[in-house]
Image: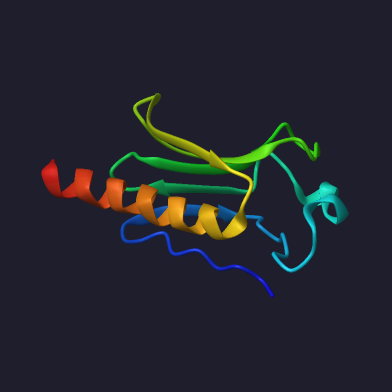
Length: 102
């Protein structure tokens, strides 16, 4: 099973190297726990960044953040892939809402 993420509207560039299988324990996928898993750029200048920190270490976590003008406007972390998907949806909503307000 692979996980798919929805990144919303106005995507300019997308890098997606998320190939972690939620049905396999993380300790069996250490080589896939990288800092550079997903990066999405939007026409508004927002960047959605998802990675595993510290890279290749089981005692790490997924970090998701939204950056605008070199400033983090959203940052959360989790070790759970299902929760990561929820946090990604939250981050995309924040990006969409800030595009409406501009």
